[in-house]
Image 1 (tube, rainbow, N blue to C red):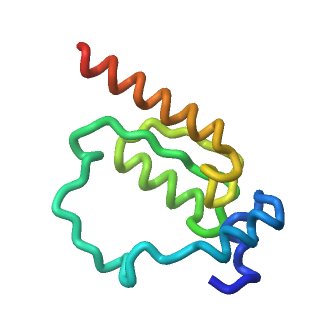
Image 2 (image 1 turned 90 degrees about the horizontal axis):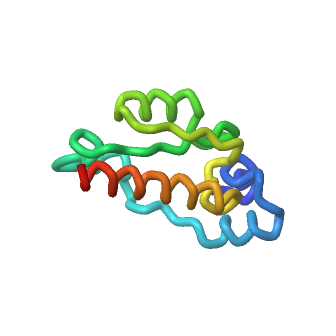
Length: 108
């Protein structure tokens, strides 16, 4: 990513944090769109999905489509592509709610 693209990726972070994200971000694998996956958990397990409504990296409509296809419980946050950085408490809340729901379904 070029330095001037960080605003699209993490535009809701303070400038100093954007610089850290830019300096430390890496592509997880060299060819992310050619990776083969043997199975996907969302086909057999409950899923949760955060739609970052201000995401300029992956369009929110695409995120909503993917979440619907997964049958996921959707939480929308007014965030850039990195809500885990800009809204960590909200993301933690989603994780906790997912864990509670999973625990309840396991007990049933």
